[in-house]
Image 1: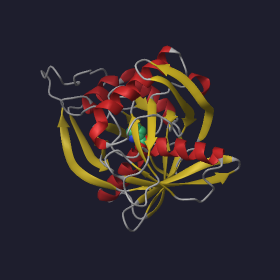
Image 2: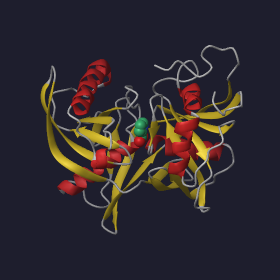
Image 3: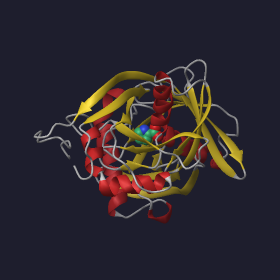
Length: 317
Ligand code: PYC
């Protein structure tokens, strides 16, 4: 593994609304660079096989998001973090921010109160409540393009909004799919077909940003929820949580449409029935979503990367 000498990697695993996060607490590669975005680039360039070892099978899976802790530039931040999955690096990850804060609390490194965390997308402020819930103030979110129509093979015309919530999303509210947990295969096929079409037509976010998350919305199942979603992640797996960055992008669109006001509470249900509570705060003309959710620790373990293991760096598919 180029430049990576360690064979044991200490991790803490959690899930946020069913979606797993694995934080590397020891044994990660040394990273160059000044900003967290530089460090992410150094990680990608020199140690991508480490990402692969941590999140690919047999140690990980396509659902898992990894988080490598790193030194923040701003010393007021509790940590910097680089999120990654089995295909690439994420600018931001909402469910993993919640998982990270709860993991730091479990390790005795964070207490109830406000914490700042540096990500490649910007600094996130996260409040750990006495209840154990976490509210994070996301990066400024916005809609880039409204009602972008595409002809999706096998499904016909689909119209969606392109929006930023820390990652790029194509958000579809009008469709003839039933958003229900017993239709995960069908929803996966549909959203993968949308993703393929966006790629084929080279439809992107601002500055060519790859739209690698697709969100579908339908009526809620749970009492008190406003909507239920299905989010396809870049890995091709679906988000078990309501997706923090996706909920942020959706809230920004609703605010811009005038269907959600500053301070209104929005309860977003996920496809597996977990809920994030969101609201919009507008500051300096920017739409900053606040998202609240809970995470639970599932394991603390050591990943062993044995010499001679043909899959020491994971199965890269
Ligand atoms: O919660 O932002 C999120 C997220 C992105 C990908 C998976 N979860």
